[in-house]
Image: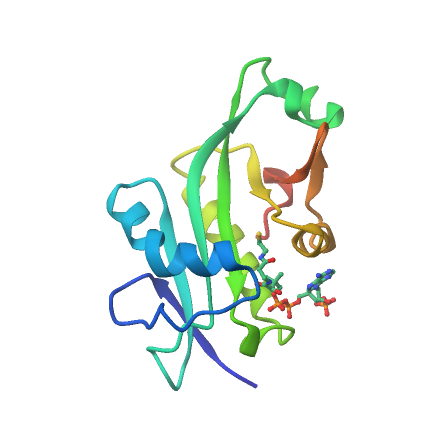
Length: 165
Ligand SMILES: CC(C)(COP(=O)(O)OP(=O)(O)OC[C@H]1O[C@@H](n2cnc3c(N)ncnc32)[C@H](O)[C@@H]1OP(=O)(O)O)[C@@H](O)C(=O)NCCC(=O)NCCS
């Protein structure tokens, strides 16, 4: 079983070789992620095998965002103010093809939720939102309890109450 280290994106990891089956996600980590970090529009986290700290096995990004109350599922909107509420956004999450279907996607998602739960002690969020790029991604997020936002079939939410402890 591979053991991974998760850390902030840094210049020592080989982004050029990353390939997850989705060209836009490959391009993002190769070319734009570090730029977004520098501009403070995203934080990016990478997973590398314990035995090879340069090999990029997977990554995710986190940013702040907001969702209008009319976009939320009725059951959640009822308990929230009638103005846009703050959320955390998982902008991107991907696992290199060589490491897929071995549990790393779940590890990255759990780590993203954990980081948001920690951050929410000082910066409130009502949930975590993610945009699924395709049906594969949508199925992955539904599998972990994310619910679709009404009228936005590719946008999913995990309410703060369901953050892992
Ligand atoms: C989607 C992705 C992140 C999953 O990563 P992974 O490492 O292969 O997933 P895991 O091995 O951790 O699987 C975790 C669980 O999710 C399930 N799962 C994985 N992909 C799934 C899918 N497409 N549909 C339904 N369930 C899925 C697995 O069955 C597993 O369930 P289990 O824990 O009950 O066995 C990865 O395949 C990927 O990067 N794909 C390309 C990019 C992409 O689509 N990113 C999504 C964000 S837009």
